[in-house]
Image 1 (cartoon, protein in one colour):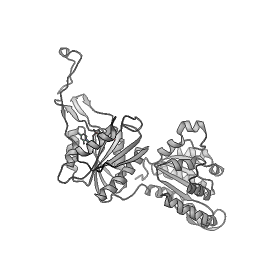
Image 2 (tube, protein in one colour):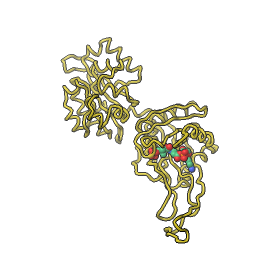
Image 3 (cartoon, helix red, strand yellow):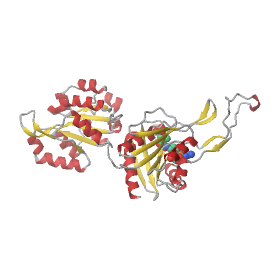
Image 4 (cartoon, helix red, strand yellow):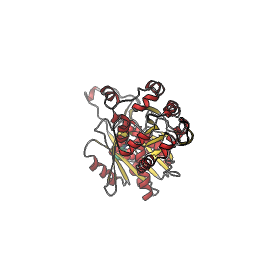
Length: 402
Ligand code: PMT
C-alpha cells in the first residue's frame, strides 16, 4: 500500500548539512506515492544542487519569491494551495526562528504563511543550538500554532558533537508524513459516500448526464478512510482509481444509485457528493431514435422525476447523520439552506459551480458548510484532497456532538 498515494507534498529544503538527506527523502516520498515539489532556501542551495532535487522530484525546483518567470509557472500562492502537506527538512534554527515569528522573507517562509495545509518541520542543527532557550521557545511557539515537529533525533553529529539535533532518516520522515493524514477520528464508523454523475438513458446510445468528475466524492472517500472509517463509495460513471481501503460500488442511473445506497445501509454518516440527475426520460427507447420528419427540427422528451436519494435515506427510521452538497450558480447560501431544510439534513456543503476553478471537474474547491442553526463555516480555495480532509474533520466533530 502506498500510504502517500496522490498526496501533494511541498518539500522545503533549508541550509544545513542534513540537506544531503533531502535527496533520499524525495525518493522515499515518491516511493510512497506522493507528488513532490521542492522549494529551496538560499542556504539549502549551498549544500545540495537544485538540479539533483529536480531530477529526483521530476519537477523544476522553486527557488525565488521575486522571480517573474517562476511565479508565472507556479506562483507562491498556487504552490501553497497545491500542497496537501508542507514538509521542511532540514529545518534549521534560523528557519524555525523565522517561522515562529511569521517572517515571510523568502519563498519557503511565504509558502508556509500562505498555505492551509498542515506544516511539519524536521529540525536539524548542532545539539547546543537545539538546546538553546531561543530555539526551544521557537519550538514551543511553532507547536502552539499546530505546526508539527518530526524529531530531531539524537546521536553523533556532522560537527563531531553528540546529542539532540540530528535530522530523522528519510524513511522515518516519509512515515511521519503519512501519519499526518491518518487521524483515526472516524475509527469504527461506517461512512456511505455518493460521488460522480448519474446517466439517464434516452435510447441504447444516448443519455442525459452532467459534468461531475467524481473528484470531490472520491477525495472525501479517501479522507474518510484515512480517518479510520469503513467507507462505501457509490459512484456514477467516472474515470478515477479507487482509493485504498474503500469499497467501491459502480452504478449508472439515479435509481441504481438509490438501490446501491439502500443495500449499503445502515451507516453512521452519509455524505452525498454525487450530482444526481433530477429527471430521467419517462420511456427509454428500445432502439436508437431516428430523426422523425413529422416532428420537424425538434425532439420532445417526456421526463419524470428521479427519486431523491439523500432525502430518502434521511427519512428512514435508521437515519444516518446526513451531509448534502448543493451545487449552485446563483443565490448559493440561500438555495443551500433551503435544501438543508427540505431534505432534513444535518449539514449542507454549498459549492459555487459558476466559478470554473472550484466546481465541476476542477482540481480545487472552495465551499461553505451550513448547519441547522444557519451557521456558516467557510473553507477557502484549496485542492479537493485538502478540502475533503478539512470537511471530514469538521463532519466528524459535528457528528460526535450530535
Ligand atoms: O464531481 P466533481 O467534478 O468533483 O464536482 C463536485 C460537485 C460539484 C459535483 C460536488 O461538489 C457537488 O456539489 N455535488 C452536488 C451536486 C448537485 O447536483 O447538487 P443538487 O443541488 O442537485 O443536490 C443536492 C443534494 O441532494 C446533493 O447532495 C445530491 O447528491 C443530492 N441528490 C440530489 C438529487 C437526487 N435525485 N438525489 C440526491 O441524493
